Length: 73
Image (cartoon, rainbow, N blue to C red):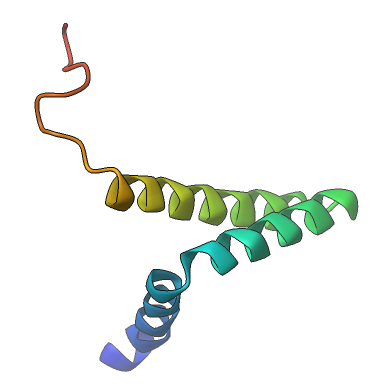
């Protein structure tokens, strides 16, 4: 079972070491996929790029626990 998950570990390790090239590749593939009518590919890579950008923001600008709006406020 570990052999099945090994490629994902390598991929996420690469994304962790090189986040900005991952975002750049995601943007390029998203635009190419959108321009050629491959909507699923376009949306998939847009999602990957946006998740990496959120992760970059969360790791470079940590917030205190009490910041933000809690549910029900």
